[in-house]
Length: 354
Ligand code: GLY
Image (cartoon, rainbow, N blue to C red; front, side):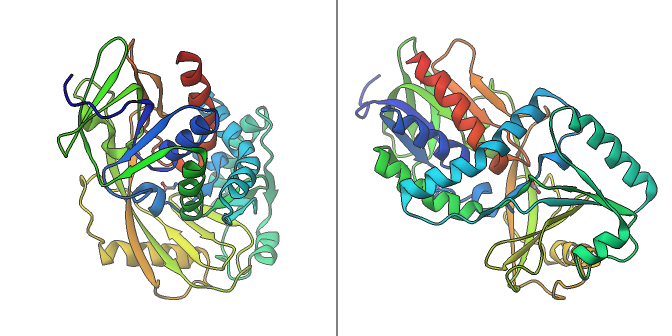
């Protein structure tokens, strides 16, 4: 192919937390990595995400996906420590525990049933009575049937992770290119060629498609991914005013160490429409405030993000057929949680293939 740019060992398409963490891990291991981003570093789901690290309420069955999520959760403390050291940047991560709440005895029984299955995978979950809930979280909805505390779970501010990954990738020698969309991919046995919107062609020994909700646009033959829009809302609050992540079905409340508190969410299949719907935000605010009455009446901030939705329980991870293209997309609601394990697993497989 003519006019190819100097080649990389690995070209990563997409600078969300999955692509960026993988780029860092590969560059640390001496691989010549180039990461290309259509818009701006970590500017999509990794900017929007609440950063809940709560596999206990995300996975129904003791599947390999659940095991992978638990592995990623267990990697978080060392991932954050190492990344913070490599970048010199603070990362807001707290293993504060999460509380899954039940409004009825039937809901509580259903969480208990799931928790019993999860216990076989080593997941700890503790029953919390209604009166204990009231003592634990002043202002919590008074009519709950109880809840389960997952003490090993927590939250991370993905924006602090992305800022640190930007520096760590640079320090490890990865090349970062922003504002350059890839418009087509081709390959032969030895190389992958990415045609860029600018007309350039970037060549690499292999590529990784980590473009989240946009990934399958690069080939009709690729496993599909679709955008699932979610609204989030934020409130400045006192640090420490909410000791655990709260969750009731699709309503959640997460507090950063600064006190900034995020509530979510909804799910919309409305394409890539970036408009923030004020009514959707007010509806989330009402749900969140019913759960925890200390939230102010109106949020200070509102935003949206696009989850990379897939029809399977877990993401597409691994080599695409016999090609030099690797897939790393479709993390749906759990991209932030799954990033450390995704980067670890794929970096080892890719290194072995080079
Ligand atoms: N990670 C939670 C959500 O997607 O809303």
